[in-house]
Length: 303
Image (tube, rainbow, N blue to C red; front, side, top):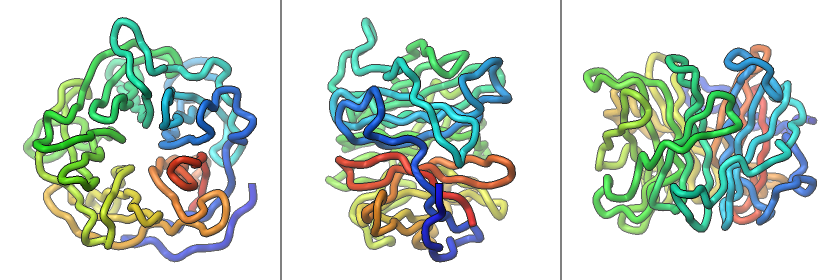
């Protein structure tokens, strides 16, 4: 992989991420039903399970029907990843639990208390589900954890990511940030949970698109720095933005562009849905690169 041209300095002291390459060649994948891939989630597994396929697991998915949660594995965040031969590891039909047009947007956490991986994914767009696994590959269905009924007037609730973050006074271990469509526009909402299974949700948006000059935002990820909490997310214009929400998720301080999309390939003006990891002390950002229905997974490195 070769570094692209340098970019601007990110706000709030965050590193600037510079395009490095793609973790795999989309055209050579065995499972690639729609030629578009979204929503990477990168996880180190070398210290969590014995005999992993690789040091790192990269989860991703097509969005268009039939979707399907996919896995690739590699030993270096800056290197190439190998497609798991039996993708999708979660399909759009999982009898007797559900049968939907598509499943997508995988996000995986490790619950050290019970040594299980929790996988969150959506399908249809109004429902987010959870499944669990002891090896990160073979999953057991848990159930529905988020749906449009918890946000008044919502028509979609999807693209959820979950993080360990205790909010003072809530007695929670986890927070969830997700996209919901209300009044025809996409905003970031949030919820909290003690166990990652039973959730409570705030019916008001955590982050709104207007202050960034956007109409729609999605792909939210929690970042912590400077003794406070931030949400990074992408806007309909193609760039990523950063907003401070505070440790209590009680503020909305828009800080501007976090990462500018490349005009050149693979971004072609759109970078979205970031997931972050560290390898050998170097920070990496995996992200969705390219137009919405022709995207692939790309990697950038902190410089």
